[in-house]
Length: 241
Ligand code: PRP
Image 1 (cartoon, rainbow, N blue to C red):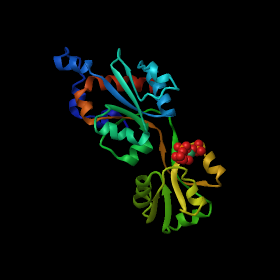
Image 2: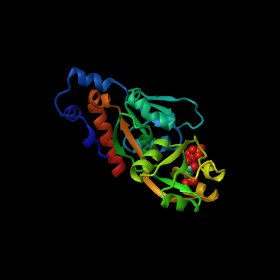
Image 3: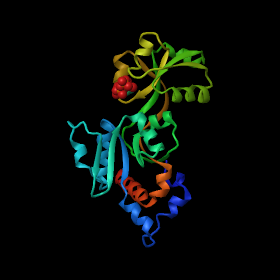
Image 4: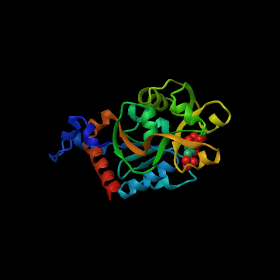
């Protein structure tokens, strides 16, 4: 989704080339706070930001247990959080910007602007299970669905397939669901497919493609319009380079 489709009108006009007012200057002096998703997504995000000219050397130290990192020169503050919490930090304004997977953004459904597809962290949201479950899906039978993503699963089965299901929320290793007969199928992300394969399960239906996205706090988009527009445009150029 493109930023300029969702941006409020004020934010668009605030990025003009007029002489900086006191308010603009104050805005330039303020930190831009960015919530990253701990783990591989954070490394990939920092690699992309590096190509866009934004750095934070401290973040490269894999042994560090620190959670907040600052680049004083560029007035950037980064913090590491669990993926599902990124939209929460951004919605409440604890972070101006966040980067996490579109699976999490869909599941959490927070009031934030989704501004950029970062083109990494690609995988698929799928319905998976044993081959025998194919028939249950085909005949729209009442089935049990285990997932870390109950909202996505509900939306897919209720609104797209018009199938009534029983949803069981799990917190990980979801593949166990059908294996121990807790559920008929799962709704989960599939990247290489090896977890499914090694556990005797198959992709039965594809729900949607997933990738890392940048999200922005709705107030920051107006109050820090100049800095945020510049940030997004430099990152977008790096994605497209
Ligand atoms: C995710 C997902 C699958 C697996 C898919 O789990 O829930 O289990 O990765 O990857 P693959 O297709 O490359 O095998 P994750 O590693 O995040 O752990 P979890 O099961 O504890 O959530």
